[in-house]
Image: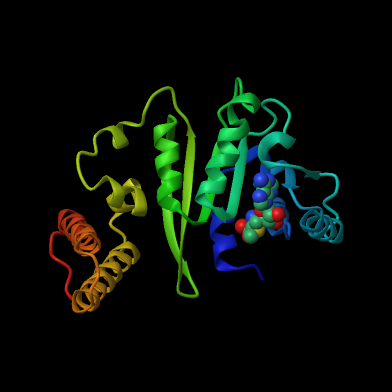
Length: 243
Ligand SMILES: C[S@@+](CC[C@H](N)C(=O)[O-])C[C@H]1O[C@@H](n2cnc3c(N)ncnc32)[C@H](O)[C@@H]1O
């Protein structure tokens, strides 16, 4: 049994010829993608020899050596030019994912625009900023919960210009980047709960900090964040969140 997070990633990967799984570690993603016939060939890579060995072991156990190629190395450097139709980078921080893209996406993809399936374990906001500011289009995104942890899954691809959705945001940009423009458009019950929880936590924090000698600047920042979140909640769900 794989985790719900990994199952979610596998379920949203489209059927493609060749998929690269960067930072594969245990190798569960490539093995399960082959089991589900999502790709004809997978390139599973990791920067750590020890991690890649774990992937090799599970690939051999499943007799998938002929369809899953393993490579040791940094990010997408391990790919040949235009080699993959999809690239999965999951289970890392959003800043690391953006660095991996920044380092070699443009050298490795000349005539192809692979589908990117990105799953930051933190810094989803920073990753979204990177993607939008560097002409990647977020085509879909999801938010899911496992063991009280929230995970974002972002599907993106290179675009010839800045994404219209991003261009049109006039206010609350930070909040849109934190939760995702498409996630907010989807108005899911889970996202509504996540934003309500955030609002409650900020209110408690403001209350606690107001009793201590904390710089007013810090409290003002939190109040501003609270107002932005309440506004987005109202604009999306049509009511102000109840406690
Ligand atoms: C926490 S594991 C995630 C494994 C799997 N992708 C998942 O979502 O469960 C992160 C893996 O990324 C690898 N990694 C970190 N930086 C990397 C890089 N620059 N290039 C390739 N792999 C990297 C680590 O060695 C580690 O095995």
